[in-house]
Image (cartoon, rainbow, N blue to C red; front, side):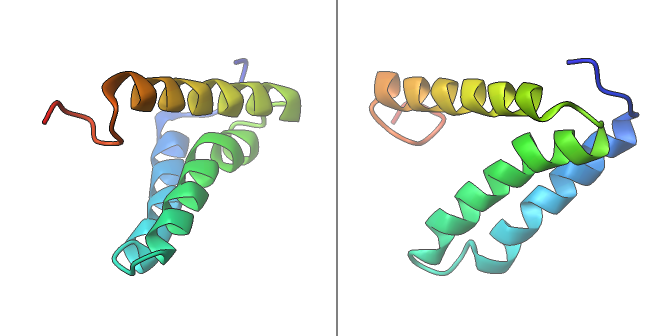
Length: 84
């Protein structure tokens, strides 16, 4: 994507993105919003801010990841990552 940064920047993005799930992920109904906000932080805000990626590239990456998430969810028929 042409960003400028180190692996420690990726670790920061993961840590920042995990915080909403840690703080509100155990509360019913709030966990859905916390998970989505965490997804946005890790895959849009993190790369855009920490790697100085253009907003258009960050939006394309976010759209691609959302599309892949929904495709996986509909193909497996579930939101879990393993076969039940």
